[in-house]
Length: 451
Image 1 (cartoon, rainbow, N blue to C red):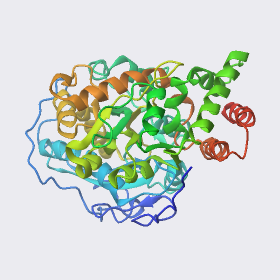
Image 2: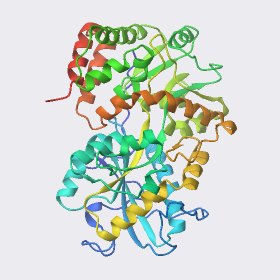
Image 3: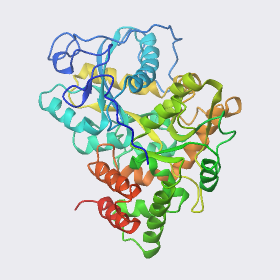
Image 4: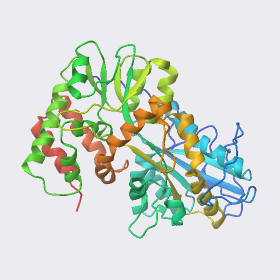
């Protein structure tokens, strides 16, 4: 097992949670929209550099051009507990800027100020800002994080007319909808987890775990991340995914559930004994290993594809993750959502609703999918053009794999305090400090919901 020294973040974290990008506000606490209680904004604003064609909204999502005016404050959550790098910031900036630029082409009187936060600390940061009345108007975060923030009263559920919500894939709508029919947040796009590999070293990605381990005996360097959410895909391949989900839901475990979890952990410990299968602390380390060509095969998030393409070019291969004797892989695909802050003025809430509705416009959804080749639409009327793109075909296949992982994704948010403890147990397991039997008991106990 290799744990390289973790480099210091390229950009400093302020107050342990906030990173200010060059185009960000000087601080949410010092600026509000015109008409709000705190005067004129003082932060930088995202300005469009490329003119995008205005798009008609079939659901009546936007007002006539020029009617909307004001400043909107958008917080973007970065899903990492290991620090924020400049490359991560560029990924988040690119995705949010594409959406904001298109919206501002239709509504040039609206400016958007952006701040980037670590999602594992977002609840504490927002709690402090809400106590002072300075929370953001919109938050672009993972679905599980939005659900957690809503349970803490830090984001506001919203109701949308049925012509708007009817555009969403039913599975996506179920993840966002509350029992009363309101939405915890507006789904925007999906980021599947898939396999990334270097074609110079590996012609195709192995279809099962046995093939992956066999490739490692032929000088292929395989990297795996020990972050629980990034490693969960192997649980499906080894038949333990449903058993772990039952534990997280507080259901009683049968003897075969415990055997499945134990078998999964034994595989992880055995895989670490192979010379060219190495575990790393997080997926960001895997991406850097691929960029430097120290690793030949890794699980990766679709959001990282542009960075890998920049380094590897046509040698980058993508495929769905390998299955195994227990069934297909079970990646936890990220659903990115726009959640509504609780401190907005009526005017800012109107802007936030307009941007959220605009984000699922069919033309916008298609443009984001085709232009990035790393995001998948949530609008069911926007099929990904898989016939014209092998990458999009792999993303769609990975997305289908992840449909069976929604249960455990709902149970474990990015800010869940059990994540560091779960990761510690996995580290102890692969280092051989505990047996698979001991790790199994510890993981089951940690996954149990607190009374």
